[in-house]
Image (cartoon, rainbow, N blue to C red; front, side, top):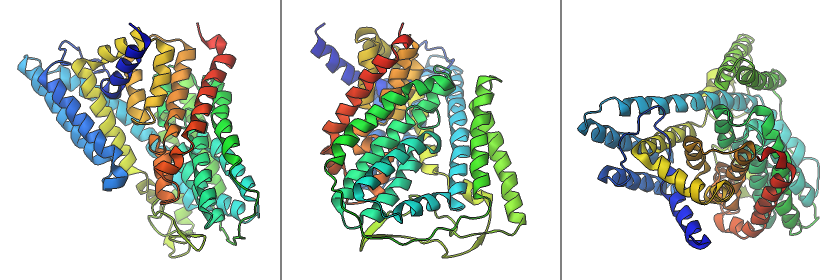
Length: 487
């Protein structure tokens, strides 16, 4: 088969089976429904739901809603067809396995989000932001500092939260300089996605790879240099478009609440527990995270007993309200509007529930379509005919259009026979490929809402060529420095 038809077939596979593949997880795939009416209907339901997800910003419809409904419909189709063949157990076994997959991811992320919200409530992120905006740095210096911090913080705090935090900085500093704000936001999104690619905690895709045990904790850091190259190449190019002028001075104050640094320490300790639980006790990482969450709740009880008061209104969170550009200063709720008694469950309530429910819908949709038999079809087409390297590079490109979570979940479920170098490659490409478009990652979508009208799909698209250069350079760097990982 010539190269062009093979590539076209691979792209078609990625937009149909690959974006919707997953194993039934222990279920016997006795029925091949890939050419059955139920299989076609399930694909149509999935694509329809994902079309609504992509149009979230236009329709103002939360992305979790369509995929949750689609998951229910798909599994009903699976159960009906199997029941018609006298099998009333396969669908149940398969869906329970997928629910277990979701439960581990859900509880892990819930614990991490609660810690991030607790640190936000104690003023840790406000302090960092105020320190940056009040130092009188030049615009180019702010460009590099925010990018470097996004790259450094996202491996721990996740790329979405990091991008939102840094975006508030450039909006506050840039003021009415929309050109600077737009380019700096692109830099932040690229840096946050790149930083999240070399850490199990930096992105959902890396977390899934780690939990599957395909790449050990320490091995992720082999991707540090490729990830850095992925950010630095477009950053150097974009920095040439920013002048060295100084922004208007900004005066703000941040109050660090009692116990802020203790919570930071508890968070770091919780990460250590998750790593140790997985590496030494061979338990799921979520056990360490949930234990750390319990410790945080105990500390929250201590803060409450001290009758400590918060300076943040109840329910306020990073990204809850889009920041508008008014006279060069972000508008929105300000600390001190109300004082409420400290309650750790407020941090729990402020988790990104829409995102968590979206993961439920995606995992169940992908699992249902995998049970119908699309797994082996996609695995043969992508990894059997094109080869692992080409397939893994395509995964990154497709993650800029289709969300990287279902794409990576599909690859993990297919379990292609790959060495460590290839698993690191797909981890890298799925993590940074979303930077090619503003809608390709959660960080990009969130920042578009934060800097609405300034950082847009088309403003990002103008620099896609530079980001693509970084994508290619990062892959080349991976093959160069991690050659020993390929067998």
